[in-house]
Length: 609
Image (cartoon, rainbow, N blue to C red; front, top):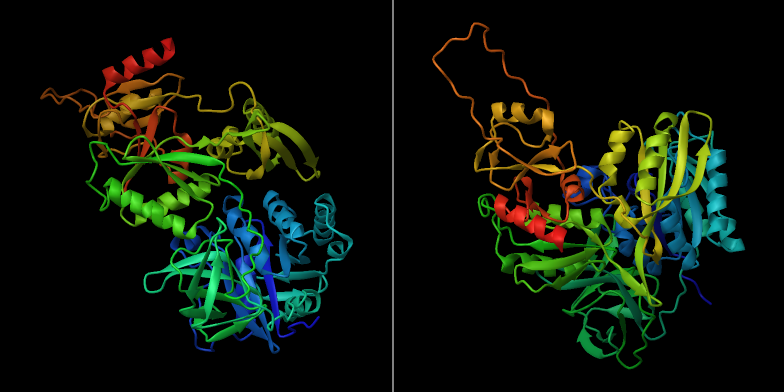
């Protein structure tokens, strides 16, 4: 069999923050892909605003590097399990993976997740031990950990013979030995060329191209990105697409794009082994095969993990609706959600009985909160319900998603963490104390038990703890109360502005969420009660002024710092009878029923019911 030695296709996989995007940066710079005077941002592959701000990769992206007459197609994948839908499809486009592992942290839950996907596809792995310059790096132990993980995940003999490159992507150094770093990326490139198999040269056979990623452009419509498995594709060619439902449809390739560096360039022709983008068909979907019109032959469909979490998105009905947002109608919100489905295959949007509400299902809190944050920045106003896990029936038994949780904490916080995860029905799988004051705990916890846990965890560990979790499997539903918020809330009594005096009167009752001068409406949540019940409070109360002078001069009023919640924290905090109101300028928590009397009636009814 002939091989295309002039090309290599590789995916870079790793846990969040282990440095894969920075490594791709250095490879792009070192290979001379950019011109001398070209302005390139750090983490150039992270293109979205949220990706840049948070330093995480959300969407898988591809780039091409020319090195010694060989084109290396590199796919940068998300490290977060919420975007696992992206990772799985990428594996279909490549012949090998570079597993990037932090030389101090070692293997983490998402390292396991992405590696498992790669080994299932029988891909050839190479290991890059990154951040080797860290003062507490432990390369030998980490290589052993990686080997143990490979064995545990059922790697075959060839996959276990993986080569290791030691690197510091930030400094642009790499080598084949841990203690001999040089300012070069050659060891990474040569390891890729020597170990990653070249694709088969089958350009003379009938065309097969599978769509693995979707993009959208207002000018050319839907764009399908994928790899040509065999044959040749050219602009103007008449082809047949084999749809998910088994039907076939003919269309003409209107545009064909190749990749070089960070640019997408128009090309006329591409052949087996190339990663390209095509346009010409409006309803192209992930997993569908484009084939020769005379010999249409479908490839197996790409399996995408199902969503595990759902929320209700609603039109904003609060007294402040329409004050801050540009798009507030149900038509606009529905259009935006359907547009998201064009490119996000892990998302589901289902209508409800109400024309003003939709059930949106995703792979986790982060997946859904990124969508909400994007909508908010685009000028949308909406309300959100408490997230719920998706329960499935498997073999006649109701099952819920379970998560594998890995926690690194200082020894003194070990007790509270174990106790709180026990309350959330967590089962301890492993505990490692390496004697340096840090403990690594591994748990299996129901997904619903982790909703809202991150904030509590950070408080328990005074910010010193690190928590990582990834979806494990569906298992029979755990009986009894799992997690949930223990504290009640302070609910605003009337419309007006929060006053310093009103806040000072309530500080003994709990934690306040609003600053003085914040606009309040009746039914809005203004703080957390330090007991389990909700209470209605007057936070807009003014101090009565008199013309009688006080013998003791009025002290300057000072209030404690109020608690400011991010979007994720607000969503995690919600209870069943509450909504989160999201606008371009504000994030507010409110009760579903704003009127105090009606709310109390409904609460009594639910207790009796």
